[in-house]
Image (cartoon, rainbow, N blue to C red; front, side, top):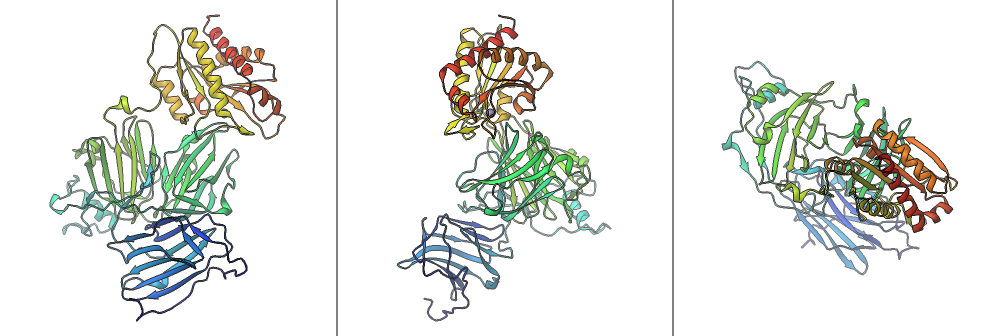
Length: 623
Ligand SMILES: [Zn+2]
């Protein structure tokens, strides 16, 4: 087949093969094709010194082969075929087993300039990149998802395709700027929103693809207290969450690989705030911002979403985030099914945006977007979803879209590869009672107080650990003991968790509020970097919590033979955001060997629970 035009054009040698250590096998564990930056990402956990790759250019059909020597593909042979692209096919397979060669074949059409293909070794991985956009269609990919990502999280979706013609200004118009032309396209001469012409809309069924988009992070820069996180590939973010002690804001990036050089490096954002990024799981990165103001941060996606600017609301005021302005070109709203709605916007230029979800709304900031006719827009709201949408001007430039949602709504935010299209899919479960996560507490007796017991940490959030002992297990056991005592005394008791599960801090507050908690007690175990730290602490934040904290702490410090470290006013998320009197009890130090031993005994745990229960009784005037 390829005898006639077989040409060996060039040879990539990433490193000269080390003949002396030739037995090391390079295992390829993952293959990701990322068409946002046209990168093939071959992931490996093999720590080999050298990777040897030979390339051959072949014709009929035109293709390039990369032979990765002394390599084993630990996953099935894979082949992807592309439409509307200069690459026709990508294929990776175990070519020979003796010697071990993994062959990558990229078949392309005449528009493809093979000399622009680049191979990089990044840590143990191989990246094949091409510096020109290959895909002409603007498929959507998820940049933010409320749910944990699944294996096929990156997939083509079906949407109404907007007409692709370039907008032209009406003949009698003297407005000629691209922004103005685009606005005219969306609004008629009376300032009314033009409905997309149904005859020009075709619904294209896109094949569901299992291609995954990988992101490789290799750089963090701090700019005026904001972090610019850069790499190659396309960023996607899961719903952020907050962890305590110290307060941290956490973003997980699925399918992301972090360069060794920046892993777990701490970057300073301000006097009291830092940021770092780590490899949380083999295919998941975790960004942790240590801050007492987790609500102030939002990720801003760049034009090509190959970088995010993790920005503090106050510190981006006056910062210019764009060099090109854009305008809304078309809009559409579509009901996908009973529970899902999709809102879609197209823009004249790539858009810089952020998305932030609140309990009752989603805010999408369009930083480089102008020309939104609010009044005309409002007049023409005839879609149930669009009808709820509001807009506001951003402080310096750009607009904010505010879309009301239900408390239980899940969102998935998508962006096209040309970054001129955004789609927001809102899923609102029909039966919210069934779909509602977490404890649903039914008040047994309206005449007695409801006490919320919050066992600190849980699930993947293990809390402080020493010698294989997890804070989350101690807090759960103490909480269960406290529950038993309070239950016997006849109170309504709500356990935020009664097993080893992860509950976000936001949800802990939400469950307390939803269930009308009268008192909130969060149980934790302390730790310090040195083993000397020892003793008991009670934390409160709101004025209504002070007396409660005082009374409980007194009982607690009297009952337990350890150092009384006293009361603290602390901005812990759970005690700051609950409305009822709320305290957080640090029941001892896991980092102190003697106290750790004590904390492992049922005696200490029971005494702690009893003391807290006694404090609660006293505070409620029942003792
Ligand atoms: Zn804790």
